[in-house]
Length: 64
Image (cartoon, rainbow, N blue to C red; front, side, top):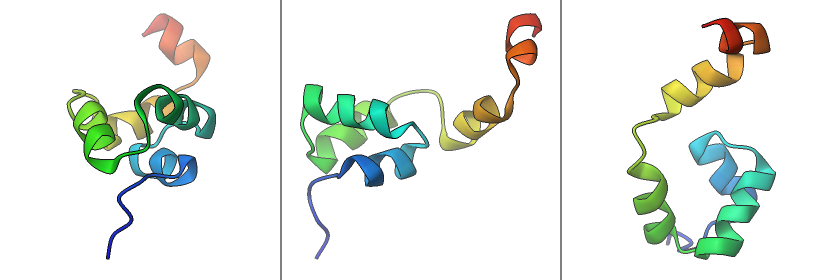
């Protein structure tokens, strides 16, 4: 049986976001998996895009 609530660590890992950001989402929107998946899954930024963004340096971001 799947836990129907996200912990901040699980949410951070699933959507490749920081643990503090995951905790803020949970405080603001609740820990319900369906709700958070709908919210975060609707973003056009897929996990692949998020990984690519994390790997970019500040210079790459600033200068394109």
